[in-house]
Structure formats: structure tokens, C-alpha cells
Length: 402
Image (cartoon, rainbow, N blue to C red; front, side, top):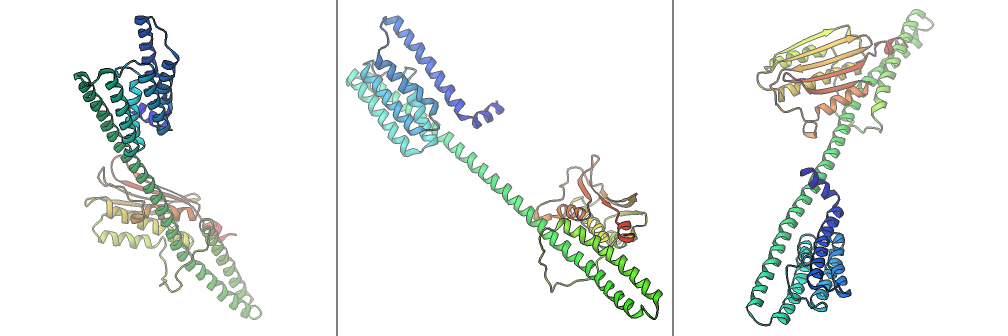
């Protein structure tokens, strides 16, 4: 039933046509019974009244006001041209009541008040002409008021529910748009921070190259061996700088405008992970670390990225894993790749690290991995806890042999 309701909401014309066909079926059955009992064929006025009352219902939500006018005209034709009396039990009379509900729910109270008032006057006038001022007229009036009131209340209820659902949907769309915008802002801020950190690496490399080039120019005639060593140093440093710059340009599409007066200090690398683990232990979180392979040879920028991934992962453990959690840090050289894995044993059901701007750690770690052509996955562990796993290409060879 829920799926059917959702499908009907997406295809309202199907529901309107179904209602029209149902009322038309009842009306045709009533006409056949009337002809059998009276042996009188249905005249042109009767056919016109039925068409005006029933057929426009297929468009009641698309064109509610024109359809209500057609239904009202059909009621007038049915009551006065056919001279059949003011009965509320005819199937076509359902169309009149359906349009009261439709105008209240989809148009507004002003249009519904005018339509309901016109229907009341037409029906009451027909009843007066047929019954006169008698007891049946009073009973008919009470019945008419109750039916119109019931349809009005029904329209108010579903109209308010529809307006609430529409407001909720608009709010959800607004929140989704805001979330996407905040995620983009978080990514941009993280990229700017990465750009500032890689700027330090490139500036250091360029300074080394300039110093070595000046030394080589001075020693080229008096100490050729010293000049050769200086030129080799320049080549190695230049290749490392190009590797860092290539990773930066792959992620940062536009020039990042940083604060030129910001305080800059030497950035940690893989060797700083051990010190980081000791500091986290001092905060009361038991951490086990294991480094496999000669990762100290990594370029400075990549080492910084690995350090930041481990740092953000341990920060999330402190924030989200619970007071009795433990963590494990693994750095491993696997062929031509570097594997980073931080796992905690937090209790099941704890909140995952946020990805919104109030907690954009996962976004930042994923961006750092993307700088060097790597990947990062973060998610819960089946037995409880959270795992961050990243793989980066090993840049040692590209930084030293080209």
C-alpha cells in the first residue's frame, strides 16, 4: 500500500481518471436501472448533464476551477432541465462533493467557499421548487449541510497534510543543497591547506637548487668533482620538486590564495608518526604502531600526507571511539605502494566521524590521498570499531632516479 500510495503521488492523473471511471460506472448503472424501471430513454439533457458532471473529473487536479464550473453547470442541467428532483443519492452528485474537497485541498478557501455556496443555493432552490416549505425540505437541507461540511473538513485535512509534506520536501532539498555546498567548501579549504604545506616543500627544494647552483658555478674550474656533486644534487632535488608539483597540480585546479603572513614551520613526515603516537598515548589512548619498510626515503610532501592521515585518524578515535578504546597504526611498504591503516576497537553503534564542515577529517584525508594518486577508505568494522585504510604509490624511485 505504501508503494502504491507513493506511485499514485507521482502519477496523479491516473488517480483522477480512476475516480472519473468509477463515478461514470455508477452513473451508467443508475441510468440503465432508471430506463428499465420507467421504460423511458435518456434524453439529450440527461446525456449533457452526465458529461458535464463526470467526464471533467479526469482533470480535477490539473484544472480545478474550470472543472468545478463544469460540474456546477452539469448540476444545474440535471436538476432543472431533467426535472428529476433534488436527490443527493445520484452517482453523478458525487462529482459535486468531490470538487468541494478538491477546491479546499488544492486551490484555497476563497474558491471553495464560492463553489460550495453556489452548490448549496442551486440544490436548495431545486428542493424548494420540488418539495415546498415542508419537513422533507428541512431534512434535505440538514443532509446537504452535513455532506458539504464533511467534504470541506476532509479537504482541509488533506490540504494541510499535503502542504506539510511539501514543506518537508522543500526543507530536505534545501538541506541536501546546503550539505553539498558545505562539502565543497570543506574540500576547498583542505586543498588550500595542502597547497600551503606543499609550498614549503617546493620552496625548500628551490632554495637548495639555487645554493648548489651557485656553489657549482664557483667550483666548476677549481674543483670539478665538487661541481659535479652539486649538479647531481640539483638534479635530484629538481626531480623531487617536480614530483611534488605534479601531485599538487592534479588536485588543485585553480590557484590557491593563501595568507602570505601566515606562520610557517617545518612540517613532519613519516618519522614524525612515532612522536605523534607517543603524544596520543599521553592523552590516555593506548596506541600500537608498526612501521614496515624504509619509509624515511619518501619525498617530504608524501611523508607529510601520510603523517596527516594518521593524525586525523587518531583524532577521530579520540573523539568517537569511546573511553575504553584502543588503536593500531600500521605503515607498510608493499612493492610499489605504501599502505596506511589505522584501526580502533570502539564499541558497536558509535557515531562515525562526520564528513560535514564541523568534522571534515574524512574529506581531508581523502583529498590528501588523491594528491599522490592514492585511495582512501573509511568505515566501520564488523566486530566493532572503525578502520581507515589508504594506499599511496611509492614515489621514492620517481624522486631519485629520473
